[in-house]
Image 1 (cartoon, rainbow, N blue to C red):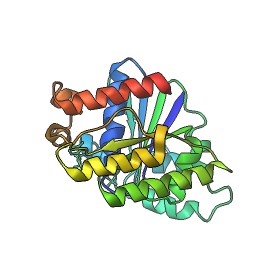
Image 2: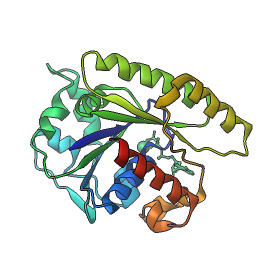
Image 3: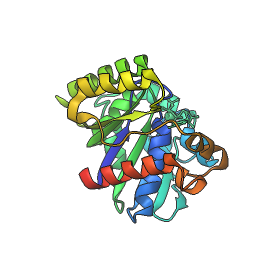
Length: 243
Ligand SMILES: Nc1ncnc2c1ncn2[C@@H]1O[C@H](COP(=O)(O)OP(=O)(O)OP(=O)(O)O)[C@@H](O)[C@H]1O
Ligand SMILES: [Mg+2]
Protein backbone atom coordinates (compact mmCIF):
# COMPACT_ATOMS: atom_id res chain seq x y z
CA UNK A 1 0.00 0.00 0.00
CA UNK A 2 1.54 3.29 -1.10
CA UNK A 3 0.79 6.41 0.89
CA UNK A 4 1.20 9.78 -0.77
CA UNK A 5 0.15 13.17 0.49
CA UNK A 6 -0.27 16.23 -1.69
CA UNK A 7 0.88 19.23 0.29
CA UNK A 8 2.34 22.72 0.20
CA UNK A 9 1.81 25.37 2.88
CA UNK A 10 0.36 27.76 0.28
CA UNK A 11 -3.23 28.04 -0.90
CA UNK A 12 -4.48 27.57 -4.43
CA UNK A 13 -1.52 25.89 -6.09
CA UNK A 14 -3.50 22.90 -7.40
CA UNK A 15 -3.32 20.42 -4.50
CA UNK A 16 -6.94 19.28 -4.71
CA UNK A 17 -6.91 19.23 -8.50
CA UNK A 18 -3.75 17.11 -8.42
CA UNK A 19 -5.00 14.74 -5.72
CA UNK A 20 -8.29 14.18 -7.56
CA UNK A 21 -6.90 13.66 -11.04
CA UNK A 22 -3.93 11.60 -9.91
CA UNK A 23 -6.26 9.35 -7.90
CA UNK A 24 -8.70 9.01 -10.80
CA UNK A 25 -5.90 8.29 -13.29
CA UNK A 26 -4.34 5.61 -11.10
CA UNK A 27 -7.78 4.04 -10.59
CA UNK A 28 -8.32 3.94 -14.36
CA UNK A 29 -5.05 2.02 -14.55
CA UNK A 30 -6.60 -0.63 -12.32
CA UNK A 31 -4.99 0.50 -9.05
CA UNK A 32 -7.30 0.52 -6.06
CA UNK A 33 -7.21 4.07 -4.73
CA UNK A 34 -8.56 5.72 -1.59
CA UNK A 35 -8.52 9.52 -1.81
CA UNK A 36 -8.68 11.11 1.64
CA UNK A 37 -9.79 14.71 2.07
CA UNK A 38 -7.52 15.94 4.85
CA UNK A 39 -8.62 19.54 4.47
CA UNK A 40 -11.49 20.85 6.63
CA UNK A 41 -12.48 23.04 3.66
CA UNK A 42 -13.77 19.76 2.19
CA UNK A 43 -12.89 20.57 -1.40
CA UNK A 44 -12.87 16.95 -2.55
CA UNK A 45 -16.51 16.69 -1.46
CA UNK A 46 -17.30 19.95 -3.24
CA UNK A 47 -15.50 18.71 -6.36
CA UNK A 48 -17.69 15.60 -6.57
CA UNK A 49 -20.75 17.11 -4.91
CA UNK A 50 -20.88 14.62 -2.05
CA UNK A 51 -21.85 15.13 1.61
CA UNK A 52 -18.73 15.55 3.77
CA UNK A 53 -19.94 13.27 6.55
CA UNK A 54 -18.61 10.01 7.98
CA UNK A 55 -15.08 10.88 6.95
CA UNK A 56 -11.64 11.59 8.38
CA UNK A 57 -12.93 13.53 11.41
CA UNK A 58 -15.15 10.60 12.38
CA UNK A 59 -12.36 8.08 11.74
CA UNK A 60 -10.01 9.95 14.09
CA UNK A 61 -12.78 10.14 16.71
CA UNK A 62 -13.35 6.40 16.43
CA UNK A 63 -16.86 6.88 15.06
CA UNK A 64 -18.56 5.17 12.15
CA UNK A 65 -17.27 6.14 8.72
CA UNK A 66 -18.70 5.84 5.24
CA UNK A 67 -16.38 5.54 2.26
CA UNK A 68 -17.91 6.86 -0.97
CA UNK A 69 -17.33 4.74 -4.05
CA UNK A 70 -16.94 7.22 -6.89
CA UNK A 71 -15.74 5.14 -9.79
CA UNK A 72 -14.25 1.70 -10.39
CA UNK A 73 -11.34 1.24 -7.97
CA UNK A 74 -11.80 4.83 -6.75
CA UNK A 75 -13.10 5.50 -3.25
CA UNK A 76 -13.23 8.78 -1.32
CA UNK A 77 -13.01 9.40 2.41
CA UNK A 78 -14.46 12.86 2.96
CA UNK A 79 -13.04 15.29 5.49
CA UNK A 80 -16.00 15.10 7.84
CA UNK A 81 -16.60 18.76 7.02
CA UNK A 82 -16.24 21.40 9.70
CA UNK A 83 -15.88 18.72 12.38
CA UNK A 84 -12.33 18.30 11.13
CA UNK A 85 -11.50 21.83 12.38
CA UNK A 86 -12.60 20.84 15.91
CA UNK A 87 -10.78 17.51 15.76
CA UNK A 88 -7.60 19.26 14.61
CA UNK A 89 -7.87 21.67 17.54
CA UNK A 90 -8.11 18.79 19.99
CA UNK A 91 -5.25 16.76 18.50
CA UNK A 92 -2.63 19.25 19.60
CA UNK A 93 -3.59 18.77 23.24
CA UNK A 94 -3.06 15.00 23.22
CA UNK A 95 0.07 12.96 23.92
CA UNK A 96 1.59 11.39 20.77
CA UNK A 97 -0.17 14.14 18.91
CA UNK A 98 1.29 13.26 15.50
CA UNK A 99 0.25 9.61 15.49
CA UNK A 100 -3.56 9.81 15.44
CA UNK A 101 -3.94 9.41 11.69
CA UNK A 102 -1.45 6.52 11.60
CA UNK A 103 -3.39 4.74 14.34
CA UNK A 104 -6.74 5.45 12.71
CA UNK A 105 -5.57 4.05 9.35
CA UNK A 106 -3.77 1.04 10.81
CA UNK A 107 -6.63 -1.28 9.91
CA UNK A 108 -7.09 0.02 6.36
CA UNK A 109 -6.12 -2.65 3.82
CA UNK A 110 -7.15 -3.71 0.36
CA UNK A 111 -5.98 -0.74 -1.61
CA UNK A 112 -2.88 0.08 -3.64
CA UNK A 113 -2.75 3.82 -3.04
CA UNK A 114 -3.92 6.14 -0.28
CA UNK A 115 -3.71 9.73 -1.45
CA UNK A 116 -4.25 12.64 0.93
CA UNK A 117 -5.39 16.07 -0.17
CA UNK A 118 -3.97 18.36 2.53
CA UNK A 119 -4.94 21.81 3.73
CA UNK A 120 -2.51 24.64 2.93
CA UNK A 121 -1.18 24.85 6.47
CA UNK A 122 1.42 22.97 8.43
CA UNK A 123 -0.80 22.29 11.43
CA UNK A 124 -1.08 19.27 13.69
CA UNK A 125 -3.44 17.49 11.27
CA UNK A 126 -1.02 17.91 8.37
CA UNK A 127 1.85 16.62 10.53
CA UNK A 128 -0.32 13.60 11.30
CA UNK A 129 -0.86 12.99 7.61
CA UNK A 130 2.84 13.50 6.78
CA UNK A 131 3.77 11.10 9.54
CA UNK A 132 1.55 8.41 8.04
CA UNK A 133 2.58 9.10 4.42
CA UNK A 134 5.71 7.65 2.90
CA UNK A 135 5.85 10.28 0.19
CA UNK A 136 4.82 13.88 -0.32
CA UNK A 137 4.06 15.58 -3.62
CA UNK A 138 4.48 19.37 -3.47
CA UNK A 139 2.53 21.26 -6.17
CA UNK A 140 4.00 24.70 -6.76
CA UNK A 141 2.34 27.25 -9.01
CA UNK A 142 4.45 29.53 -11.16
CA UNK A 143 4.55 32.60 -8.98
CA UNK A 144 7.17 33.96 -6.63
CA UNK A 145 5.31 33.46 -3.33
CA UNK A 146 4.49 29.83 -4.15
CA UNK A 147 8.11 29.17 -5.03
CA UNK A 148 9.21 30.58 -1.66
CA UNK A 149 6.56 28.52 0.06
CA UNK A 150 7.79 25.37 -1.73
CA UNK A 151 11.27 25.99 -0.31
CA UNK A 152 9.86 26.44 3.22
CA UNK A 153 7.58 23.42 2.83
CA UNK A 154 10.33 21.09 1.61
CA UNK A 155 12.63 22.28 4.42
CA UNK A 156 9.89 21.60 6.95
CA UNK A 157 9.27 18.10 5.54
CA UNK A 158 13.00 17.35 5.70
CA UNK A 159 13.14 18.60 9.30
CA UNK A 160 10.09 16.55 10.25
CA UNK A 161 11.65 13.45 8.72
CA UNK A 162 14.38 13.53 11.34
CA UNK A 163 11.78 12.31 13.86
CA UNK A 164 8.75 11.37 11.77
CA UNK A 165 7.99 10.02 8.32
CA UNK A 166 7.33 11.40 4.82
CA UNK A 167 9.96 12.01 2.18
CA UNK A 168 9.53 14.44 -0.67
CA UNK A 169 8.53 12.45 -3.74
CA UNK A 170 8.66 15.49 -5.96
CA UNK A 171 8.02 19.16 -6.47
CA UNK A 172 5.34 19.45 -9.17
CA UNK A 173 5.22 22.65 -11.24
CA UNK A 174 1.60 23.71 -11.81
CA UNK A 175 -0.12 26.60 -13.61
CA UNK A 176 2.72 26.71 -16.11
CA UNK A 177 2.21 28.98 -19.09
CA UNK A 178 5.17 29.13 -21.41
CA UNK A 179 3.99 32.43 -22.91
CA UNK A 180 4.63 34.27 -19.67
CA UNK A 181 8.10 35.31 -18.61
CA UNK A 182 7.15 34.72 -14.97
CA UNK A 183 6.41 31.04 -15.59
CA UNK A 184 9.76 30.55 -17.28
CA UNK A 185 11.65 32.40 -14.53
CA UNK A 186 9.94 30.54 -11.67
CA UNK A 187 10.41 27.16 -13.34
CA UNK A 188 14.11 27.89 -13.75
CA UNK A 189 14.32 29.04 -10.12
CA UNK A 190 12.65 25.86 -8.91
CA UNK A 191 14.84 23.62 -11.04
CA UNK A 192 17.99 25.41 -9.87
CA UNK A 193 16.96 25.08 -6.26
CA UNK A 194 15.44 21.60 -6.13
CA UNK A 195 17.33 19.85 -8.94
CA UNK A 196 16.18 16.25 -9.34
CA UNK A 197 13.34 16.73 -6.88
CA UNK A 198 11.37 18.54 -9.60
CA UNK A 199 9.05 16.10 -11.34
CA UNK A 200 9.40 15.38 -15.07
CA UNK A 201 5.72 16.28 -15.33
CA UNK A 202 4.69 19.90 -15.64
CA UNK A 203 1.00 20.81 -15.29
CA UNK A 204 0.12 23.66 -17.61
CA UNK A 205 -2.59 26.23 -16.98
CA UNK A 206 -5.58 24.77 -18.75
CA UNK A 207 -9.22 25.87 -18.96
CA UNK A 208 -10.57 22.31 -19.04
CA UNK A 209 -8.82 21.48 -15.76
CA UNK A 210 -10.54 24.49 -14.24
CA UNK A 211 -13.94 23.59 -15.71
CA UNK A 212 -13.95 19.93 -14.63
CA UNK A 213 -15.04 20.41 -10.95
CA UNK A 214 -18.16 22.32 -12.03
CA UNK A 215 -19.34 19.16 -13.79
CA UNK A 216 -18.23 16.80 -11.01
CA UNK A 217 -15.89 15.09 -13.41
CA UNK A 218 -12.19 14.47 -13.58
CA UNK A 219 -10.23 16.15 -16.35
CA UNK A 220 -10.02 12.76 -18.11
CA UNK A 221 -13.82 12.55 -18.22
CA UNK A 222 -14.47 16.22 -18.89
CA UNK A 223 -11.95 16.73 -21.68
CA UNK A 224 -9.97 13.56 -22.45
CA UNK A 225 -8.13 15.19 -25.36
CA UNK A 226 -7.19 18.38 -23.56
CA UNK A 227 -3.60 19.06 -22.68
CA UNK A 228 -4.72 19.20 -19.06
CA UNK A 229 -5.65 15.52 -19.35
CA UNK A 230 -2.34 14.80 -21.10
CA UNK A 231 -0.36 16.51 -18.32
CA UNK A 232 -2.15 14.64 -15.55
CA UNK A 233 -1.69 11.38 -17.46
CA UNK A 234 2.05 12.09 -17.42
CA UNK A 235 1.86 12.54 -13.67
CA UNK A 236 0.00 9.23 -13.31
CA UNK A 237 2.76 7.53 -15.35
CA UNK A 238 5.49 9.13 -13.29
CA UNK A 239 3.96 8.26 -9.93
CA UNK A 240 3.10 4.74 -11.08
CA UNK A 241 6.65 4.18 -12.33
CA UNK A 242 8.58 5.74 -9.44
CA UNK A 243 6.51 5.07 -6.33
N1 LIG B 1 -3.62 23.60 -14.23
C1 LIG B 1 -4.69 24.38 -13.96
N2 LIG B 1 -5.18 25.19 -14.91
C2 LIG B 1 -6.26 25.99 -14.65
N3 LIG B 1 -6.91 26.01 -13.49
C3 LIG B 1 -6.47 25.20 -12.51
C4 LIG B 1 -5.35 24.35 -12.68
N4 LIG B 1 -5.15 23.68 -11.52
C5 LIG B 1 -6.10 24.09 -10.67
N5 LIG B 1 -6.92 25.00 -11.25
C6 LIG B 1 -8.02 25.73 -10.62
O1 LIG B 1 -7.45 26.60 -9.65
C7 LIG B 1 -8.22 26.63 -8.46
C8 LIG B 1 -7.36 26.19 -7.28
O2 LIG B 1 -7.01 24.84 -7.47
P1 LIG B 1 -7.07 23.82 -6.26
O3 LIG B 1 -8.37 23.94 -5.53
O4 LIG B 1 -6.72 22.49 -6.79
O5 LIG B 1 -5.89 24.40 -5.34
P2 LIG B 1 -5.52 23.98 -3.87
O6 LIG B 1 -4.06 24.07 -3.75
O7 LIG B 1 -6.15 22.68 -3.52
O8 LIG B 1 -6.21 25.14 -3.01
P3 LIG B 1 -6.37 25.17 -1.40
O9 LIG B 1 -5.02 25.55 -0.89
O10 LIG B 1 -7.41 26.20 -1.15
O11 LIG B 1 -6.76 23.81 -0.96
C9 LIG B 1 -9.42 25.73 -8.73
O12 LIG B 1 -10.48 26.54 -9.14
C10 LIG B 1 -8.96 24.83 -9.87
O13 LIG B 1 -10.05 24.42 -10.69
MG1 LIG C 1 -7.37 22.14 -1.88
